Image (cartoon, rainbow, N blue to C red; front, side, top):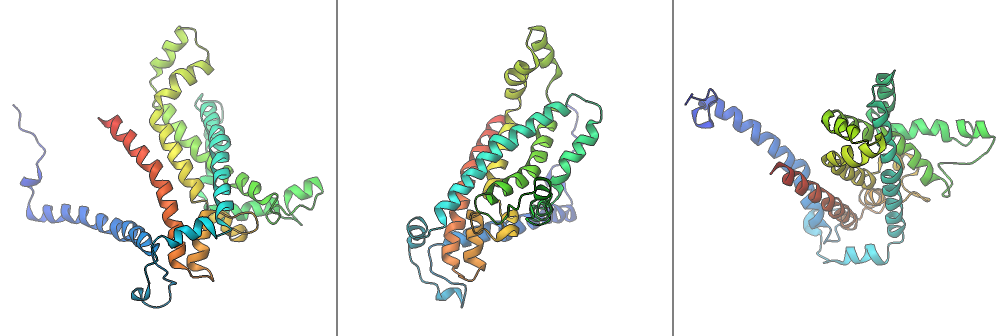
Length: 297
């Protein structure tokens, strides 16, 4: 039997072992320090009344009081939950299908598809804060494009009857390009023989996509589901730029920031809100990991 040309870790030189150890240890320490340590710290602080002033030793345990207050005596919480659910519904039922539709069209190698891909994907490279400023030029009450075109004087970002939907349009503009790119990459990886077999059996393009192509892209579908849920929960930048999550734009993420770094400075209470966000996100992440691990087996 031929000897493998690849050396195991036992055959590495001392210098190579040090390099490999550093390559593993440094990223691991960074993840622990920047991700896991703050996450665990937030969970622990959620059971205290620490206000961020003074040492941590001054924090007193309060049990689940912060969570009880969140659900019972904190007025912005339930509107924020409702807005997050609306955000998720619009992203999942409107923006995501639109991104899939555009991916299917561009997968046909239509004329100018490269230009269209670039134009649709361009908003993805922009931050949500910058997206908010760009759409301010469209939504502005005095000089905005919409009001100039229609002759109205609606304050799209300021009126609580409209600002949530205005923010959702701006966010969807960015989300569509991301979903389009994910599905376009997935469509490129579909075995062409599957479509040819469906065509031979007399299936039209619509039936082929929903009965053959879409089920094959199950891993992409799960990724899109998880990304959409997480994006809906962390929809912070755009809303914060508009009005800091007030007056009809309350979201859980903005409530966390308001309580932790705002005038209230209620670190324990804000950590309870952050922990709730973490728990909700973890449910979908665990589902995604289980499906991925099942596929690898």
